[in-house]
Image (tube, rainbow, N blue to C red):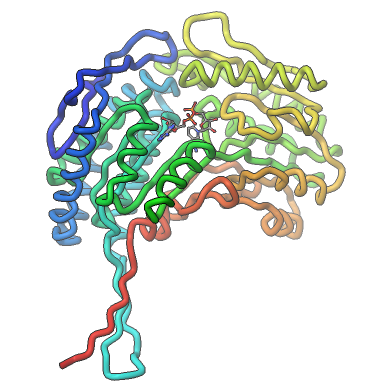
Length: 475
Ligand code: NAD
């Protein structure tokens, strides 16, 4: 395992309060180490460092900034095995997935850094004798808060965009997966990011976020997590008139139309469902299948479910690790009990595995009533509720009935039906005939209560920039 610490003003510290929390391996429930928590004095130091770091970093030429960030990406690629192992130990996902996540975030960092070269402004033909221009500048010190499901992916999305744009950042990564965040920070500092530009803290999430968001020096709030917490942070930020980027939860519908290939759809959907044990905000989580292809879809989905190998992510051949924490286990048990009590058929899984660790069996429910909690609340775990439909408009109505609007998936062989789905789904991220993940070059983000602001693509950088209009009368 790696050493845990806070990173403030270019130095590792154990904080000034002496308070720690244990970090667990979810596959064994063993303690991996103790994580120091920041006091408000530590947080104030981090904010002061970020103010100083912002002044330093915004003055670094874009060429040098990009070179430093590429060096950090190189280091991350070199250390992918080590960082991936740290991630599997503290989060549980299979080593191959963890290593893949590290490589992916190195790519995202390079993409953001290169995109910062194109933060063009413009000169506007002026109606009078002023020179009228528009410039983009870094917004300033950022406060960011990230969860435990993508221990490298979530922090890197914020750090890469902030640093590429020329901002400094104070990031509170998850107290449950701190080692991966510490490893990321080491890559940046060894690559030459100056002191104060990147600060990493841990603590009581509610206290840290309230304290940091209230600081006038913090100019932007970026959060990934649940909708209730997102609303709370947006309210804090609103009272200070601060912009926010909110990447919140989803409950992604999958519509499999009558003309789709049910076998291919089931294989792709089942694979996506059980990746990271379903703890993904874009995870397919409501399966609406046309009655003509329902039986074939369910048969193949069950076969794919039976091929999932659950175990410690460090072991060869494991395709699904434990849930990341005991809260998710309890939530899964409650979703299943509720659905079954309302009449759903439990045809696979449905319970915790009888071994140490937070393991839950890949679970399939069919004929799930519309009022079952698993059909209306984000499950964030390895549960697949499958229902049939006969009319596509009804399926779209069900898909759009919830306040979520993050991801959606459609399967059809008809281009006209595909276009109907594309226009009909109320979602920020749409995949047709596959269940692909996010990519660096295109924006990801939700609509409705799934949040606002984008990560990835040119839109990702825009969130960290402010626009300045300049009219210059030449004298
Ligand atoms: P939670 O809602 O308490 O926490 C979610 C994340 O927000 C955690 O990382 C937590 O540390 C952080 N958090 C909580 N309160 C905070 C606060 N006041 N200020 C700043 N950060 C705060 O619940 P949880 O048990 O960790 O996760 C469960 C739910 O969270 C899931 O059901 C899912 O909906 C959601 N979630 C979403 C994502 C995502 O990628 N959008 C990631 C993780 C969790």
